Length: 361
Image: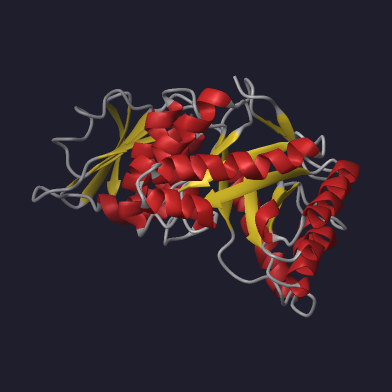
């Protein structure tokens, strides 16, 4: 079992635990710059609103890129207006970490090896100690030291071993500074490398691990890679927090992560959606209905199963286990509960009636 660390800091942020017997947390990363919030209250309001939606959906942590002072100020402003734990992603300039710590950030993502010196690292670590803020070490295949790259090239070690050794070296800096509130992340765009480097680390060390397949790709390919890597590791009880990295929206990253955690038995409760793929018998546009309803359903605090079926063949019959379902039949739509039809309506009233029956559960 890994050791526990805490995200929360001294601000209004919701305090959460990572590691130990705590639930596996779900992360995403904001996908646009935040260096212009000082003169854009509308954008700030939109960001806060989106964070709230993601929090309701099931996201636990959001990471923000902080490449400059303006972005640091923007992140501090965001953090002052939400209880969502926020992570500042810092590269090269340790002073940006210090700027972010003036706000209510919950964690700093830095690598001691790329912010200049151990003195700079100590300054950041001391500031994190003072503010009760955790640190995430992030290693990927593009950040390996030269000597390890040479060993990999000469086949003395595998790339997975190189990723693990890099993480160990970075972590040693924190240990020397008597700081143990850190998470280790080792990522590769290769699924097997991601699995192996996390296995190597988990065999010897007890620090919490953040799982991710870096540069995983577009929606389908990225979900496939992440599902294979995460399910393999989570089923071995390796991994304390995850992010599905997609060339897609933050909502899709969160929804994909939620489903992976549920299918691996690492998250319980909430709405479970089952739906047919659609075929030539189509009597109801399953795809369109799912697009309209998926995020709303997954955000609900109901422990129910919802079935969305394209025709009566797959309707009440195959969906009879569902608490509520919807299916098409010609110009009509049927709403059923536990396999029994409760309403038959014209298609234009489908959403309205479905919502009414859903709310009655």
